[in-house]
Image (cartoon, rainbow, N blue to C red; front, side, top):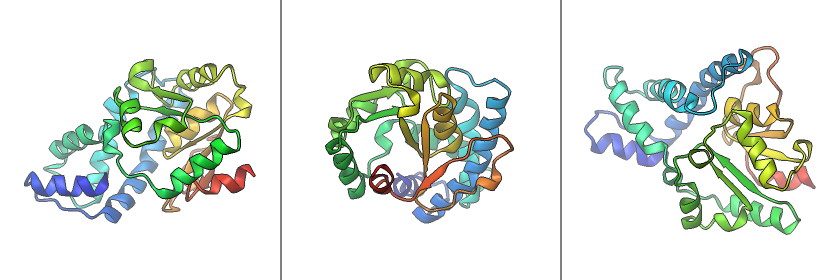
Length: 227
């Protein structure tokens, strides 16, 4: 996805070409503010069922990512609109790591029931099928179809219901954005892990009272943790 964004900026004549690693580092830095904003809303009891991330938070997040990556501030607004259009559909995530497939096969082979909870636009199931991943998951929740987005607790509760009423304390959720994934899952009593492939997560940036979390550099670490 990040490489395709770099080509997009170059093709559209925005005067901004960026390599994948620069985007990764800028994204990680911007996530600190993303976490802070959502946590403030969470503690204030002001997390809407839907629309909170896309309309008021993601736009500021991506603008910060672009400027940290070297975008001209005068072009940032128009570029942010382009990025939101590219990244919102599930199909923008088109690279599957070999370790992911091995881990999914290990999990299902050891009797774990798998599900996905995603803030998407209704294209999640079709995209997972195209990528060869849908067959590994018993439950697939697309926020556009459910009518509620992470980190609102209702979408996590819905996943537990669809799993047959599984107790939250017996469920483990893995996500890559602390304030959307870890906070949302922990809010309903699920265990949660933060996927942090670059190892840049800094818990010190969290405000007091935020739930702690353990990080993963690779999904393959799940085999050791669950063993």
